[in-house]
Image 1 (cartoon, rainbow, N blue to C red):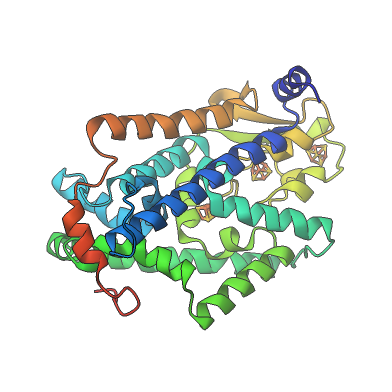
Image 2: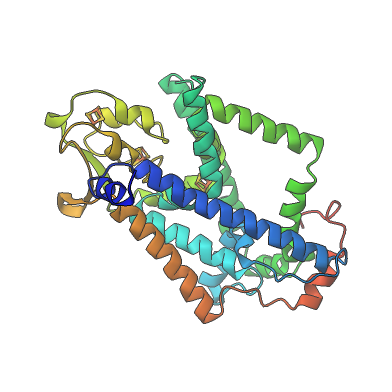
Length: 340
Ligand code: SF4
Ligand code: SF4
Ligand code: SF4
């Protein structure tokens, strides 16, 4: 398809799924590249390679629990985390995106969400995707909220400032990104079986990891309830084809709603894009003002890169930990290093 025709389709609210896959794939490739560079950095810092490669700060995106701890520290002290500042920046960007643009971080940026969406799409193509009864589907949503509750209780209620400072100064906190790398590069047999089980379940249950287990997504979903943007359905124009229900990664029954206000909505726009009825599903700002569908990803990406630019120019992107300190910390046996 010529690019002009694709852009014209996008303006009409069509083909948002193609745009989404391109954006998600770009972030995923960037994350894989960062992971590769971080592996090289780790090999150098732990004395297993002579070749120095600078540490990519973006790997800290995978440390949301530490970021929550340090968001609390920021609110209590006004001080930004000097150890994993990029992690805190990305976390804050995701929270702000959720508050204003639904779970746009999940729908457009997160590589784990992308993998989950791909497994779902493959499951649908292979006719493996199941539709659990409503009661079971609701039950499947619960674990992520329980995990979120657990982390909020531990971090927001139980950890005072002294406990946060103690945690931040541990070797564990310094090497937590390398520990995560080790978790995936040298998984235990149990880890491997859990990963296989999660992957297999993702072919049968829509967006399984995100909808059932991810506490980060649960937090973003709750914040997104405050978002002023939402998908609305004009009932008189609906032809009840259920196409919107079938494509929704959040398994929301869009076809029976006047307005989608669900913590499962990731702002992907796929329901709007696929709806065959004229003026039926639309993306709306407050006051029922209709917005062009591509405005949502454009705003999500703008917010995200504004945060990145701000962090870069204010010195809140690169870790302040000296390389010699990291080298010493990475000499620790990661396998035996336990959470303090
Ligand atoms: S729910 Fe979690 S894993 Fe899924 S896209 Fe959102 S943040 Fe990523
Ligand atoms: S309701 Fe629409 S925008 Fe929200 S997750 Fe479902 S398909 Fe995407
Ligand atoms: S895709 Fe559009 S017309 Fe079809 S059920 Fe959904 S809202 Fe109605």
